[in-house]
Amino acid sequence: MMKTMKHAGKRFILSSFFFIVFLCILASINELRFDSLLEFSKRALSYAPSNSSSGNNLVVKPSSDEIRLLIGILTLPDQYHRRHFLRLIYGTQSPAGVKVDVKFVFCNLTKEDQKVLVALEIMRYDDIMILNCKENMNKGKTYTYFSSLPEMFSTSDGPYPPYHYVLKGDDDAYLRLESLVESLRPLPREDLYYGYVIPCPSMDPFVHYMSGMGYLVSWDIVEWIRDSDIPKIRLEGPEDKIFGDWIREGHRGKNRYNAKWSMYNYPEPPTRCTHELWPDTVAVHLLKTQEKWIKTLQYFNVTQNLKPSKLYHIP
Image (cartoon, rainbow, N blue to C red; front, side, top):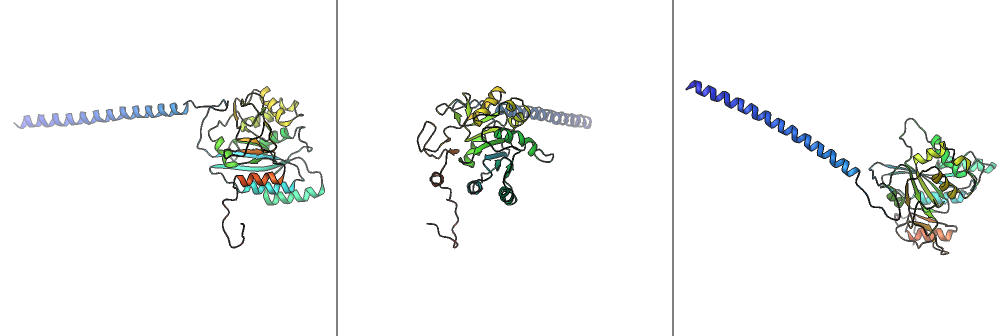
């Protein structure tokens, strides 16, 4: 009787041991299957196809990383009042989850008063870039701007690239930074050419080039402009058209985004390039007068966040 009980006990212990081993093996197999399934699902999501609109040919790859954007507004050294005005416009815009640096860009100083007044601006605002060139509009200033950026912003202790995107803008254009940033979030960060396509009636971003009111490229194209011989031999002519020629001849900008009609010329006088002011706006161009600026700013209600105070009364 005792022998029988001992044999039964041994069989129970062995059975329990093998059962526990079996459960461990089963759990390991399930874990491997789960990991494989998870990895498969991640890959499937990262290569999921996306919809395209407005003739844009893009591989949409959203990223949760902070966007770094440089906006260079090409202007003239003597445009002090215009720069101060634009500082109000852009200094009161604070889009979330993005680093936006707005710089005013012009060529070498030529007057004694500029050397004092521009230096004071730099000391106070630190938002000016002085290029090593003779002031011009269509004789290479845009090339000098883009080709100078890699050296200006190269650093061993900062992120790479220093900016995901670089925009060249005019000082008579109003950029709505939040709308601009939201339009960039789903877009590729390589080989991107973004803007308002010319000719005005066209919606095809590959038909010609992007308007000089404000076009944007990814950092890899900025580095290509610095290194390639194509831009160096074609500097003169309408700067936005010449820039488009570089992109085409260099087979760059495979990812293009036509921001029409979120970008447009001011509605008056009406032309094929104008559009009424509307909420879905990234940029309004040709704000040549104070009246046009004020009407635009009033439409977008830019002072809505003004805090009440006993120090002022604005009806």
